[in-house]
Amino acid sequence: MITARKTNRCRYCGSSRLTRFLSLGEQPPSNSFIRSSEIASEQSYPLDVAVCETCWLVQLLDTVPPEATFDDYLYLSSTSKALVAHYHRLAQSLVPRFHLAAGDVVVDIGCNDGALLRGYPADLVRVGVEPSKVVELLDGSGIHPIKAFFGADAAQRITSEFGRAKVVTATNVFAHVDDVASFVSAMVDLLDDDGVFVIEAPYLVDLIDQTLFDTIYHEHLAYLSLTPVVAFLKTHGLTVVDVERVPFGASGPAIRVFSSKSSSRPAVGPAIRTMLRDEADWGIGRIDRYTDYAQKVEGIKARLLELLENFRRSGARIGGFGAPAKGNTLLNYVGITPDLVTCIADNNEWKQGRVTPGSHIPVVSDAEFLAWQPDYALLLTWNYLDFFLEHSDYIRRGGRFIVPLPEPRVVP
Image (cartoon, rainbow, N blue to C red; front, side, top):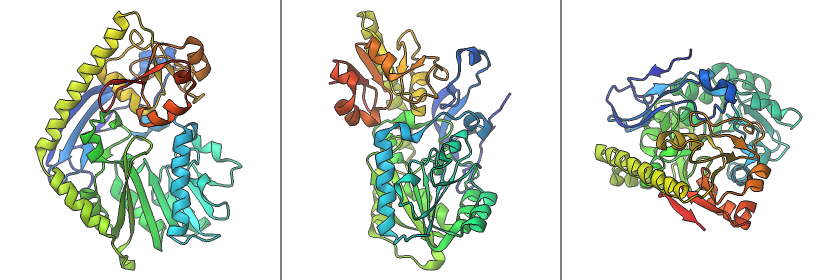
């Protein structure tokens, strides 16, 4: 039996002023796709969200031990062509921007199957840190794999074997870390004096403005905005030098934060002051911004469930399209079962033949799904909507997507 640890102090500033504003119920880890024979032993944990009224970091109150989420981790970045293209664009933009040259060390923390690292030129020393079995896919790729959770030991190993890093990326992983202070301290030891640390994570403002509650799950311990990140990194000797809003990321709209060692006296771009002012005007420090969001989440749950049940009563066949981790938050919170959504298509072979955690909907291959061709498909990978409308065989054959967020609707 694996138990979660209740958090009573902010992960960034240590304050005890944590106010819960949203509860999504008890849920299993979102990437723990299981076999039908394992349903009886499945564990669930509270999914409660709070805001720190000192530094305004939004975070989960319960921390599930890493072994419950990463021992049988089935997420593969490279199964999404759109995400691979996104990561390649990022890697390719970093080369000229930070004057990377042959032999320079670049490190991706939480590299998964190497989707980002493969976007760099092969003459760089590419190092990937990944705790799950997915790291085995890097064998023979020209990327140096390190199977570990990132920390002081991994940083020491990298610097000893390869030297300090010119660029360290943490895309869709920085917000996963519970002991984030130790994580950043180790990263600072790894980073070259003129190096840059790049964070990409779902952006809190988008999550709230677009009511994207499915981005909330146990892996994502924090939901980032620039205001708390700037203050937190400063305490570790890092200066945030630039920031970008990215309309497309692994889990939806994202924020990309660039920081360098304060000792190098880096120049701070104008985007920092602008975004900090915008966040203050938006209401980053107003508790009603968060409580209003919780009410909107409840409304979407009711409307989506009504839409699905109306289709079912009319005799329509409903499937699901894509089986991302975030989709399981939505399925479990809304209460969607195989009675409503018969099966879900996903091209990740590791997920096929299993069932979704909590809701226990079978995951099938794209070919099986197309052979069935349901009338509607609940698009759990809604952030890829434009891509699938253009490229999906399911849509070409007359299928229609039920897009759950930011507001339930049917397209085309």
